[in-house]
Length: 57
Ligand SMILES: [Zn+2]
Image 1 (cartoon, rainbow, N blue to C red):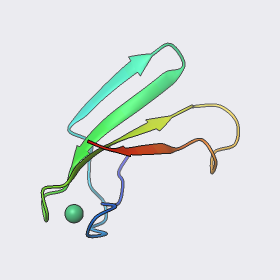
Image 2 (image 1 turned 90 degrees about the horizontal axis):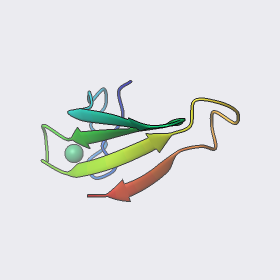
Image 3 (image 1 turned 180 degrees about the horizontal axis):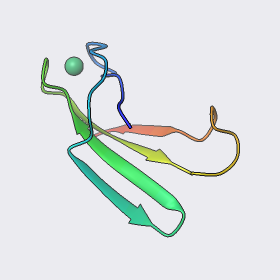
């Protein structure tokens, strides 16, 4: 699951870490271009376009 950097919009960034808590899967990312770090949590079921929560690290 790749993501786009929210800071410089670099695309196709792969997660450097992931952890699962029950149904909740969270990925940590670090942008190779601007070194921005962030985390994305996804729920695997329902509303695929409305389940993302973003938080700058
Ligand atoms: Zn970036």
